[in-house]
Amino acid sequence: MTALALDIGATKIAVGLVGPDGTTHEVGRIQVPPTGVWEACRGLLLAAANGSEVRVVGIGACGPVDSPVGLMQPINIPEWADGFPIVSAVQEAFPGAAVRFAIDGVCLALAERHFGAARETPDALAMTVSSGIGGGVIVGGMVAVGHTGNAGHIGHVVVPGSTDPCACGGVGCVEAVASGPSSVRWAQERGWIGETGKELAEAANEGDRIAKAALRRAGIALGQAIASAAALLDVDLVVVGGGFAQAGEPLWRPMQESLGAHARIGFLRDLQVVPSELGDRATLVGAGLLTALSSPV
Image 1 (cartoon, rainbow, N blue to C red):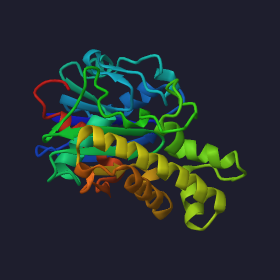
Image 2: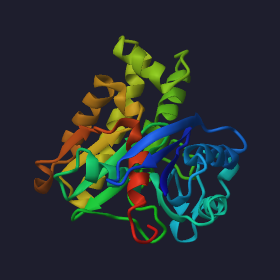
Image 3: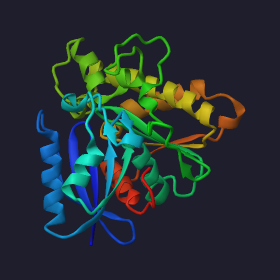
């Protein structure tokens, strides 16, 4: 019998086969289409199952989510922004399978706790900085979920002084300031002619003035958000992954400087912020780990 993992992100959908030891091997990946998102997910899942009986599916989804009712309401997938019943859809595709569902940040934290940089650290924050900003919280070795399933959603911590509008409807969220698309928009408004976060990072590393300023702005905001979250949660490790987090020194230096300026209280003196060891596989790996749970997250 087969166990599957499904990662539904803001820009990509990935599916994997889960082994008996909880490790997940990716077997399919596509970009999120503008329409027909469920049909795309279903096609990937059926191809991965390859006609075998599926006993369990773990789903890691961009949020917000309503875990108790199995609903996705992703800000960055317009077709589903008003809600999509992902759990019931997967159960209809595989009637005999159990379905485990969690926001991508919970899956990220599970993955970092079991296979990543937080293996030896019982109190940590795991983050992804990409097309959006998300996170998951590890407390006493356990991953926090929250009553709706959205615990750890650091992307909507408010950056001091920012009035940037966020897709969530609020203003000043760190996602509205420091995500890849937000940083690209800020740079374009000041004359930069690139299109993607990867291009922005490359330009910054090559010395482009506007690109460097955009990444510095993002890094400062990330450092502020991390300092606030670390003080609230009393963690001693923050693991940062995601495509935009790989921008290198132009992002990481101002992030560390900002963190040093704000995380000054004594119990944060040993706080470490490190890159993820799992890269963009982390949510899929965490979705695979959900399949081992005895009940839905």
